[in-house]
Amino acid sequence: MLAGAQLVDAYSQHKGSLVLVFATPHEDIHSINLSVQAPERHLFRYEGSNRSRRNVVDHFARLRTRTLQGIKIADGDRLITWSFDKDLRLIMIPFGGRANAYLVDENGAVLDTFKGAPPSAAPQPEPAKMPGSPEEVRTLMENGKPASRLWPLLSGSLRDELLHRVGGIEDPQQLYDAASMLQSELRDPQPRMYQDEDGSPTLSFVLLHHLDSEAEMFDTVDAAVRICARRRLAHNRFDGAYKPLLQAIRKRHAAAERSLTRVQKELARPERSEHYEHIGHVMMAQLHLIEEGAKVTQLPDLLGDGSMLTIQLNAELSPVENAQRMYEKAKASRAAREVAEERLDGLIRQVYSLTKVLDEVKGLSDVSEVKAFKAQHADLLATLQQTSAEQDAIPYRRFELSGGYEVWVGRNARQNDELTLRDARPFDVWLHARGVAGSHTVLRVKGRTDSPPKPILEQAAAIAAWFSKARTSSLAPVIVTQRKYVRKPKKSVAGSVRVEREEVLLVEPRLPQ
Image (cartoon, rainbow, N blue to C red; front, side, top):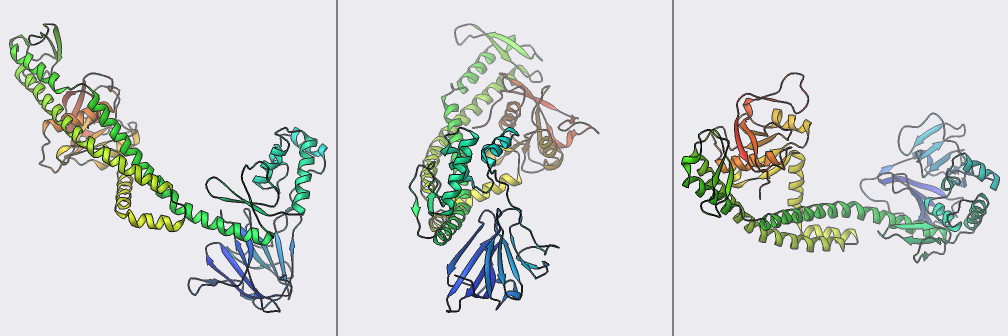
């Protein structure tokens, strides 16, 4: 069809895509599209020319006005040679690591390439070795060659078809016969296109029995390759826009569901504020039985069944202060529960809304629908991008507390060092479970003169205890100090520090609401 046609244009208007435009003696225009950009590698012909007015790069000026004399495909290799007058040749390799187009003169010297610097010599065919008999198949298999690798010129779908036709039985004679039949069918192609579950098209020139789906038939190989290539381009463009969107919505939806589950579990737990308040009343009624400086005391439950209660104390506090501490814990627990109840309704609404959005995303089928979705949900997507950027900027676990306070927790020894020594400010509060391995924890304060209230310190300490070996303890001691009093000894291992001044809070290991 193209022999005797004149090359009138050669250009690129998309990355990795070369277009050659030919004019026949009858003034018909045909274009050849070569793409060497993975995963969209292809070679097909179409009628006419669609060169853009802008963003176009010209190629192979020496071939302009040259007449095409013939096209030859190398035996056993996907190397295509286009021969022109003046002894010029254009060697195309659409697939593999050498994918490119090379302009070669009569002496075999490479004059130009579509991409990259010209090599010193023109690429030569590298014929694939195919077994010529059942005995050769047997020998190759005995030497460890997998059956799926014996015929390298067969594509992935054809290799699957080969194994399907032999029923998975790797008998050399059956494999050889089935491969011979496949190659015979390929010499008389019946082009068809299958579609995967994700919408990706698969081109085949034989009937694929292993695919349990209908195929779209084509009259010519030329039409099948052209349409399949364009559908793959459209599918890949859709994937490029769709998959990151789906992943972002799924991530936000999963995070909202986890938050809702945590709040529901917290609200399902017994109310702790009444317990703390009860202990406070028992202590206040029997202050004379509590020894100064004691770490633990046992008191009869005068307001209950009279059984003995074991109560953990802060040895640095007086009996009255220890009782007051119980009242403060009751107040903090009651406030936390109120916040959880308020969050519950909001999280239920958020999960419901994100479920609807996620279902909507799953229904998108082309690029135009993705664009319309992004325009409709621009505010939500902006929030997702902002959240992602914040997570990239702050890699630590983060917890927001009331009053605008925030807690950062290291995830590993390296992050512990970075959090403590690089990102924490000197006046931030540094916390760590005492006497056990655990994560470095930093309470971000509002300024040098800010003094966080005790309930906030206890919440931060509870977080530090949670991310430590003391997580399963009913109460755990936690070091509390300013970051400026934390030092790293020379040549110490990652995550190892020395604390110069410290206070200790005794808290229940737990995460905030």
